[in-house]
Length: 104
Image (tube, rainbow, N blue to C red; front, side, top):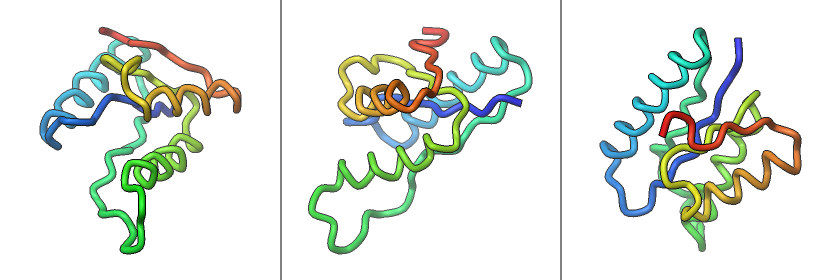
């Protein structure tokens, strides 16, 4: 079974909006690929107490999750999101296949 990591823009969105988009992406993945495993990369925990750059902390946690994936899925308007662009670059540099804008 293929394991997917969903990269999506999150800045300025509520947790509910982010999760709704993820559900839409997950439904598309199941329809397109059949039986899949999707990494739950939604980070609900707070950054470390001494964190000086919160977005960088979240990105680091995301990259840790990306390391478990067979495929990176770039979802939604990812081309304008710093984190998505960096996750894409990591996938390219480390040989993780990419599905860009799946279903959108």
